[in-house]
Image 1 (cartoon, rainbow, N blue to C red):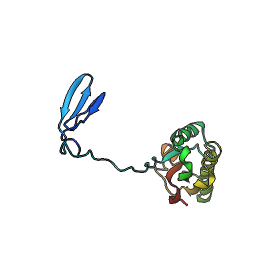
Image 2 (image 1 turned 90 degrees about the horizontal axis):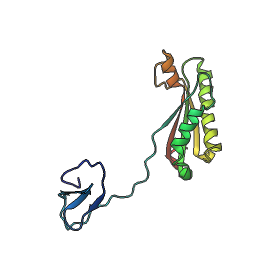
Image 3 (image 1 turned 90 degrees about the vertical axis):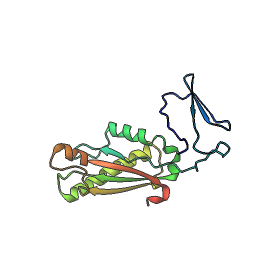
Image 4 (image 1 turned 135 degrees about the vertical axis):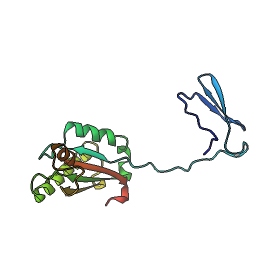
Length: 170
């Protein structure tokens, strides 16, 4: 690492490194930290990296419903609010899911209706270009919880929003 020792600091006020040991001023107390590289060597720089994709956003749905609840709209808006300015450089993959109540064919259609509802919200309310969004339905084929309990079935009724670089999802 850069420093030979590590300090856990609550409030950092000032850092200086004028060709010598790094000096950290913390709430009026000066603590000296020995540098792990020669004093005359230039400070290492970190290469710029593209922003990491955000974690998947999981939106839950009521039983046998495909309409986007207000809580889901809020979660989606909050999660994507920092990215919508970069929407032209991002792709959004929406995967619709259902619990195991009902036929396979019905749950496939329900998963698609849920993903379409999320796509429509992202396009119409968050102004993300529609060509940056792909939609898929997995019906009941990819449960994240047991379909034997009401709690598990509720977890399986969802749309997963995955954000990637623009050309990664097509």
